[in-house]
Amino acid sequence: MVNPGQELSSIDFESMIGGPLIAVVNAQAQAALSTVNFIKSVGFKAGESDDPEASDTGDPIYVTFKYPKEISPYQPAVPASGDTPATPAVPAQIQEMKLEVPILTMLPIPFIRIEETTIDFNAKITSMVYRKVDTNLKVDASLEAKAGWFFGSAKLKVSTSYQRSTTEGSNVNRTYSLAIHVKAVQDEMPGGMEKVLSILEESMRGQPVSAPAPVVS
Image (cartoon, rainbow, N blue to C red; front, side):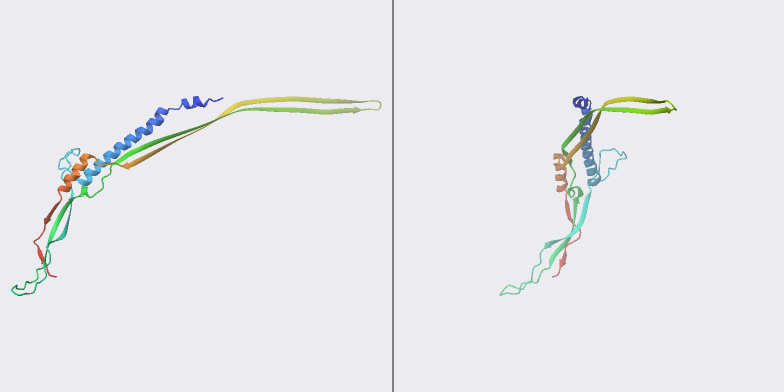
């Protein structure tokens, strides 16, 4: 008879539980490195150093675009009134501006954190003891007869065999299942990264590209 307690005690729970937890820690580390590589490759230019492992990542990458900006609004003409002379209309003054925005401030930065890990282990052990008895009885009979003028004779042969066999044993069915549930969320931005983005936001530059041009309405 199989003892389920002994069956379960033989399972290496240390590796079964520790293995997924180590994988979760490694996944968290890879997620952090992916965030660092994302910031370096997307937000900053490559450094000028010949050493590929140098920590200097160069200048921030800016997105530059132009847009029209109204310097002064349109002023309509004022007709003469009394001693006040007429004033002609003054067209609006439009100046082309150029704005430079750090691209890192325009993109969502991935900060993935594993919030919860659940390990479910199910074991089903079914033990069955069986005993089988086979009985076999065999009877063979034959009759021989002789006859003459004055007498006759008969001979009967009977043979009997008996066989009995017993088979005993046990069957054990084992079923194991392991389920791992991982819940990952977008983590809050670290304080250092918030400071970097704040500095980059302050570095947004807007400057005129050309002299103001009058717009006639």
